[in-house]
Image (spheres, rainbow, N blue to C red):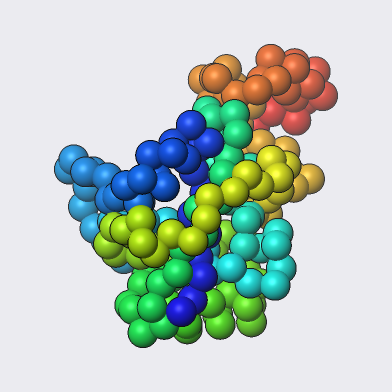
Amino acid sequence: MAQFVHISDAKNARSIRRNGLRLSRAHGMVETAFTKAGIFALPVIENFLISHQWVRELKRRGFREAVGVYCTIPDSEIVWAGRYNAAKQQMTAVQAAGLLRQTQMLGFETIIPRSVPPCEIRYVRAIPQILGWRYFPEAKGRPPYCGCSYCQRGNIKSRGLQERLTRGGAAR
């Protein structure tokens, strides 16, 4: 059985332990080669940072503390896997874990196309809160695409960023 980790808000931990991970009712969502409906998770591999790379990006959505929901998925179960902004491929859970282990790809995601019942959840644990990347995996060291007040609205420290970009003439 392949082990996967789903990252969630700590305030949902009790509910997840009791009810499992349920598919959201995405009203009007259209599945394409790039977007699939399901539970987003990553295979747990030896590299902790790669397995938990989405923590920092998901924290931008507003929750304070993230937890890892560790579950086991049957080896032969079909999942969708690939880079977050690329077409997803169907493969077994073990193949997805092997692909992540081999490539160590930042931005990798796996989508389990069903709900995960509580009996498949092994444990829910607090995880370090500073792992991963923000915006996109290659963003480190690059200025934002746009520093205007509209594009930066609601982001942490956006006023200082706007001042720095306009003062330095780097705004695009």
